[in-house]
Length: 521
Image (cartoon, rainbow, N blue to C red; front, side, top):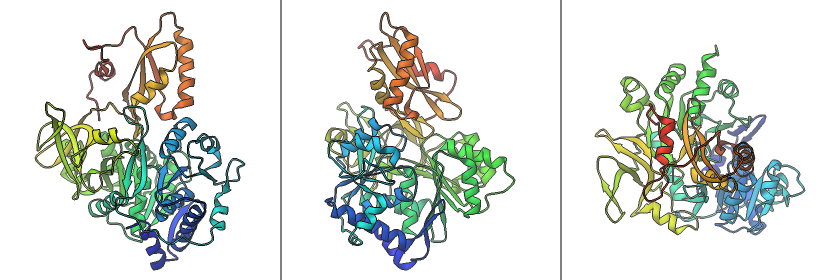
């Protein structure tokens, strides 16, 4: 089933019902369906065929959602790129995906031109000399709406890119089957949406919030997209009140904290708000209790990955009320497995294969229809992550007798800063481009606002100028890395700790920053 059938269905059942609001722009389900099918038609007329990839380089907005849906409608595969990506990072992703088209904002003209491998069709939201066609002209030039394209369950609908521990971007192939399973799990276990619900997107539609646009479309709800390009708690609260928002699709714990602080200073309650999903990073218990005090029992927590899109375990709204609020063992958990998802603990045998065991500590593994098909054109990484149908999450944890999943550590050293994953290897490779750096390790250090901040621990080449090197390193990181990946601190030491076999002991480097406190994961 092509997931865009939900849009077509609601356009027929409630053509005049508001589908999306973005600032002063409002489109109905009939209008949205028409624009989406015409954009899909234009892409077909310009040579794209089912399965071809469509890149997105846009800030949150109506056009981003239209592009995403048009790709699905036409049987293409959408490749959303983080709006904060540098031109170098964007080109890495879009060249790897071999996109046939890029739909981008004018501020990303340099990014779009950096994509050379597949010579994609360039569609710009604004007038831009580098583009092949203006976005609205593309829709108007289409000879007509494209009929909803038939797809197979295992056809790839979304390439969700993650840099991974190797530093090379990896595209998790999410199929129509995967996304359908995700939507059904959301509606069954988190929130049974209705057409009279209003869903707010304040986090990037290129990530979790965009995935959660699909359940809203499935049920014909109205979606509201904030206009700020950064997280603005005051705007969000004002929008909740003025638009009678019932749901916030997705927030990171840092965003929840900021929203709580803004709400505590406001005399007007957010009375319409019924449900807020948070996840992507650890949530400090005191911050969560403050949020519950401010907004009431409206929160659900989700634990997932790009490879199992936001659907491994969850804490429901019911888990956030009554005795559960006082129980550290509940609020400290990642949640319980979704009804349609298996979660177990794996330990490695002598041959390195995963052996599934029911209890104890080990790597968390999951199996369900939501688990990705594999990594795009990367069979080695696929074979390493998928074993006999089980996805190796890279997270070390345990499962208690009540089925609560607890995360103990991250076996892949991922830094989670403000809900965004930062992979140390990617940052280290940029730093090691500098001739004055002999060795480098990147770790996460505790940060009260962001959870973790990125710290680079460096060894200088003999005779190097430390002060000058640090200035140049910061400029180098600004060129090649998104701002959230850039080290906020550079520490210089004489030697990195190594094992008897010469392997850098990253855990020892990290421990100096976490001494006296338990690392949150």
